[in-house]
Image 1 (cartoon, rainbow, N blue to C red):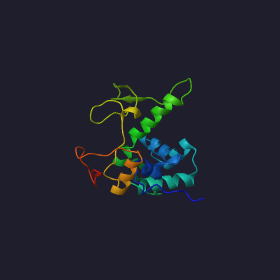
Image 2: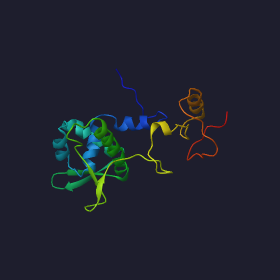
Image 3: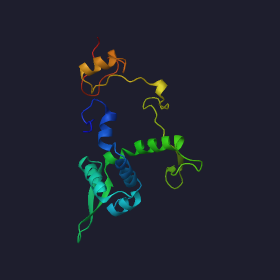
Length: 182
């Protein structure tokens, strides 16, 4: 059975899952975020097959989340370093980890905690907050709206089916077109 591609869906979540939705890719990014840069070290830490790791690393380099940086010239060897795009994925990893700590951790507690602010910092937990007011985002407090990345046809259908609300001219589009008044 052929797997459905989500790469062109008008949904950012679907597009991210197309790129990072297998089990190994986020773990490879986690290793890079924790400073593990060399193929052998990533492979040993994850217990992943060399061929699978090579595929994931190549894809992450091709997609601009990692840079392949040579560290040995005699025998060509590389380290994998997060790019700005890759570093921007860390809050997603931290949020996934926080959800896992809340719902899946055993009685011993979370396997990893984060210190924020350097050596003199404090323990921190990931929290998704509103960029405008700083309040935590909870499902019951948000409404999906047809965004500028949807075509007018897709937006009309989503609104008609009740999957999202209609944007108003008071919410200007960043790109593309917003859903015109019906």
